[in-house]
Length: 194
Image (cartoon, rainbow, N blue to C red; front, side, top):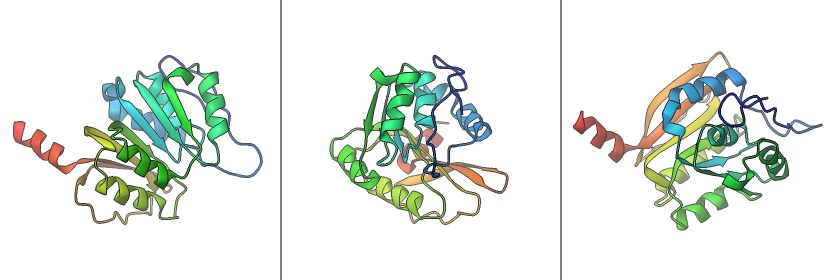
């Protein structure tokens, strides 16, 4: 697994040894994701939950994101090592804590992240739970924020959302899909201006 472009281009990230702790985002899916986001990554404040190796958040930092918070109770040490490898540690904070507790903490602190990556293990209901919590949170995601969820190709049960709106979805073979969400109020305001 490598960083595709930017300041850490070509750098290979460490992955967990032994038991399969993470399911890293495939390079082709990651490349497609960042092609969709394009120049929107630069200057953004990133939150990477269920971060695994830190692959998505580190790619964002490499492409000019302002800062990143990584959350993963199991792989926090590994993420720190990958940040050192890519020389991006000074722009990052790694939290070894429960994702849902951290979402509450960051929301209460009015963190207002402008780019959130959510890539939990498939088929455990975790992305739906995170999506529902972010939907109800004030202060967690910025007004112009983008939430990217990676989930199984057969996981199509989006929870009832009051504030977030699905704005884009892309499927990759029989295993993966990416769903992009933004605040409904922001999307509707942008549509009115067009």
